[in-house]
Image (cartoon, rainbow, N blue to C red):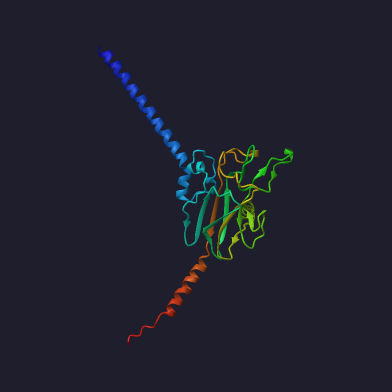
Length: 257
């Protein structure tokens, strides 16, 4: 009698332990999935990640699924501004970002990554920075393309794209990485990005594929990072000049009146 009771009690205990283990496993799995989905959201909140952290392919990412451009809150200070543009607009030749402003004596660093849906047949996703086409003769390597480049408008700069006044972001990044190039701003202006294509109607970030030559394998939508460093000495000088000007313009304190 007692043995039978102990037997059933043991079975009940085992079932409870098994049920708890399954529930715990599911909770851990759900947490992992939520963490995976919210990786980009966490990066947006912190805004201190590397640009590459925004461009990994995650089909469950809410921003990627919607496919619309997003500009997270920037990091702003007297010395430096940092902006991130997720899924930059590639459905038109140029897009203005008047909230991202440049001042004289600023230096600007541009970084970008990710891919874009360019439309058409077959594998149609291409790199936003350095797109390539499938060569007619594969033994000679990949063939660079004259289209599908992310661009930035720069005044007083030799254009390197098919759109006048715009430079390919690829060329800016090459100069920054290889020749310690710095983009110096000479006048008050704002950011304008562009995109090279002969048909913008089917562009976007939908129906992901690996792209020809697997250039977009494991890579999601495009992202652009703009880092603006301000000339602090100019800011301090201007503030001091304003203060002196205010002191000079103050009326004298005549206590006899």
